Image 1 (cartoon, one colour):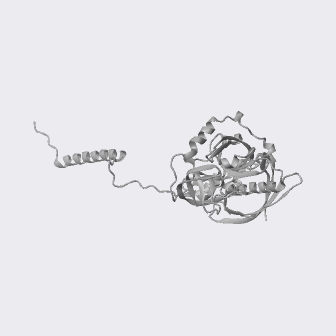
Image 2 (cartoon, one colour; image 1 turned 180 degrees about the horizontal axis):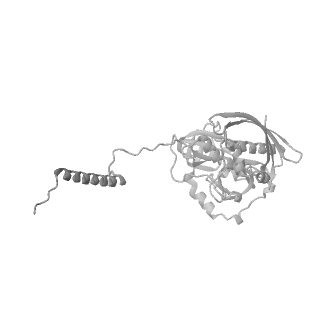
Image 3 (cartoon, one colour; image 1 turned 135 degrees about the vertical axis):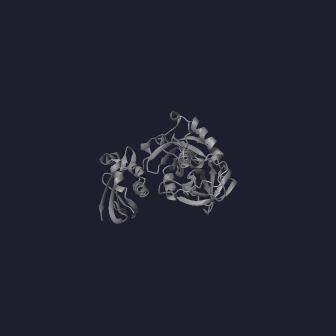
Amino acid sequence: MRERRFPPIFVSIILLIIGISVFFVMYSHWDSEGVSISNPIINKVTINSGQLDLKTIIHEAEKNVVQIEGQNEYNTITGSGFLYNEKGDIITNAHVIKDADVINIRTADAQIYPAAVVGIGEDLDIAVIRVPQLAGQSFSTVEKESLAEIGDEIIALGSPHGFQNTVTLGIISGTERNFSVDGFDYSNVYQISAQITHGNSGGPLINRETGKVIGINSVGTEDGTIGFSIPINEVIDQIEQWSNEAQNDKLDFASTSDIITHDPEQFIQEAEYLIDYFLESIDIRDYVNAYALLGSSTQSEIAYPKFREQYINIVDMNYSELSSKITEDNHINTTVNVTIENKLQNEEETSKKTYKFDFTTGYENDQLKILNVNSSES
């Protein structure tokens, strides 16, 4: 029998088809698997978004800073403190409350509550007080591990009210300072360039980069040029021991109704602070916080989504000084002109208009609230 032969060109075509098929199979396999490099020359580049916005850090920190008033039959001592856990515990200085018979606190949103001593140092100038009404709220994050270093940027906050409230910026200018003042021993404390006044005592020292509390502002020099702050990680063990051992039914609290002010001038001052805090919250786009300042009747008239919608397009806001008076029904009527720059819908342009706002402020369930808000274009 004669052997059958394939033409060379036909064999070449078959080999070409096989080669192309093998190539596509191998390509598909390589494409589906990642390439592992054990010692890469090129490293992944990450973009650092930079420090947290200063205005945001201060606004968020102020929510947890309180003004503390320690009263006895002779006088009232005012200082600061900050909420640090979910139990409603507040860290402050021992010298702020040591001589007080009654202690009350005023929060950033102008609420006033009685407080009880959880623990207080004899030689160490730290103390913890508790306000059950603040339990479960957000609180300051403290740096329990690392110490700050010379040159670190810091923010020192005082009471949240306009009375003694101050926000000062500076750096850690010294560490491991040791001295004694008024019977208290200060060991390994931070020296800071930010001023510490009476209103700042007990307030938080915040790391500018992280936004965490790194110290308790305690004392300052008489000329106000240097302050000293107790590192939080030096005292956190004692603080947590006091907090864990305290039981609410064994603590001594005053009545809320007994500590509400009846001084008309202070009443106006507190109402104006509340309005200013409301406008500040709107300006920084913290609509949840602003809405919480409204009384229950006002909240029942406007749900939060609709309230937020009223302010969501604001890109800038400036307002004049507040003008207030006490009404016949013992409320505070406050008028303020607010210039608002709004972003026009679906456009890049903005419009700027001035409105007249009328606020009515009064007590609801023993707490100061914004009872009514009216606005009109002026």
